[in-house]
Image (cartoon, rainbow, N blue to C red; front, side, top):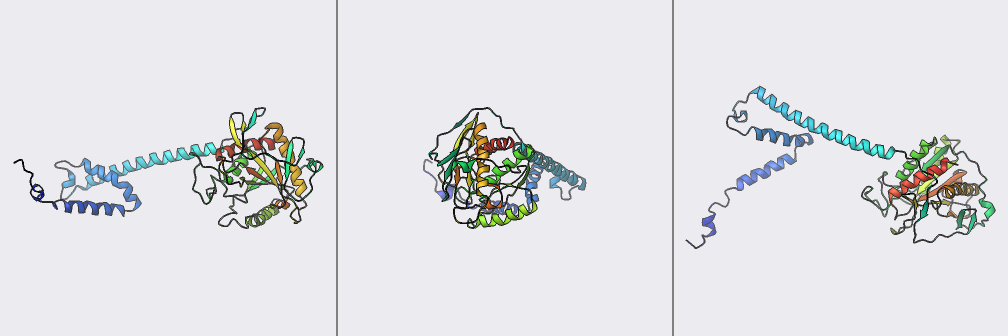
Length: 358
């Protein structure tokens, strides 16, 4: 008897359980095509059926008692309803916590230490006014006298918009996102639109009237995004006659994830900001460019007083960037691709404090 039995003698009926396996597969397939509500109820039904697996159970009656079936259905319904209610409450609590976090306004402190973090891009400028530096990349001649911030604009009404709305930052565990391009996303809670929303929130807390345009102008086509925003913002200004201040919130276009211009303010790390001002250097009519530049100098002078290093030098360029629309129109670039959304949101807390002190 030490010899091993042949396979066919040890397992004389290899196909004995095939029908059972096929039935199980058919059952699983049938469950997969159930409607959503039925799928959610299956675990509760199976649990009740398991409880009725005993001799003499009503489940085995040829003619089940109607009252027992009603009680069975009620138990299934009550269990399912209880669990669904718990899930809804948990979801509501999570949403509430998320909304509380996004809507929480923590006023920026003043008189705290600031320190610019080391950057791979050196700071360059060609002309300055007091503490404010300007890099003139236009074909226009620019002197210090042209930077004197002798402008007074209506700042109580501000329009925030985003010509390149899909620009985004280095993803983090808290702020991951689905990409629509290289450092771009259509998720408005992860792009520069979210940065604009943060600025809107803080400015409203200081009593400003904010209109935030969340239109995505650079998707599906990046080309002509300025033409599209020009039309929309022009229409918006027709409805808001007294508005003089327009902030076009961007992210620095340098596509190098190691470039993350950052300033430490107290214990927080914030993305550095940069004004980009257009001009008539490209040959297009732009009567407001010097006023826009003076306005940017005025803001940056105050920022340098309160939070030195929050701003990088202002850049003046030939293109207009739609800034011919108003006397207080400018691009504010918030961080770069190497920065995180957290850092850029922090910047808005300090920028809003600067604006509120002007």
